[in-house]
Length: 100
View 1 (cartoon, helix red, strand yellow):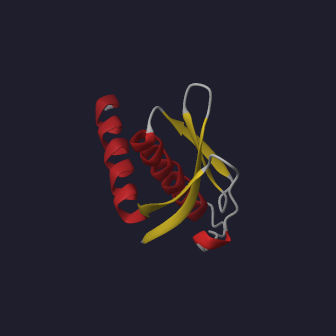
View 2 (view 1 turned 90 degrees about the horizontal axis):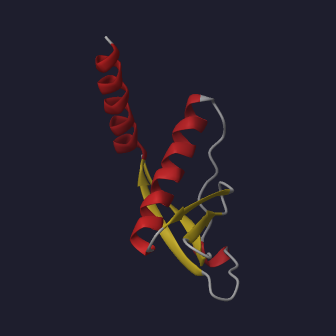
View 3 (view 1 turned 90 degrees about the vertical axis):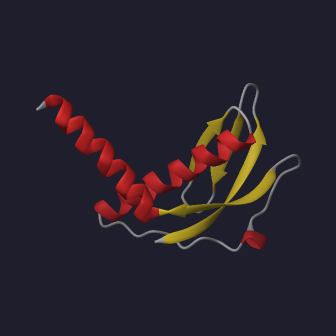
């Protein structure tokens, strides 16, 4: 499953902070590339957790419907939930092998 969510990015004191309005989650990064990657990870983790708990996953808003404040960057972040699930499953399997 591939999807794209709108994200706002603001400059914090020491980091860039992203906010995903549709999921009401925040994350941060040291630079623009980092905060976008962290946003991708946060969105993916939120969706996988919601799927596993049977929760409803909000549809992404139209980017034009998102209100921004002065100085905020509005962008889109794409996620591939199938790839993310494979990645975390590999980590879990690798961790399990360490303890066996």
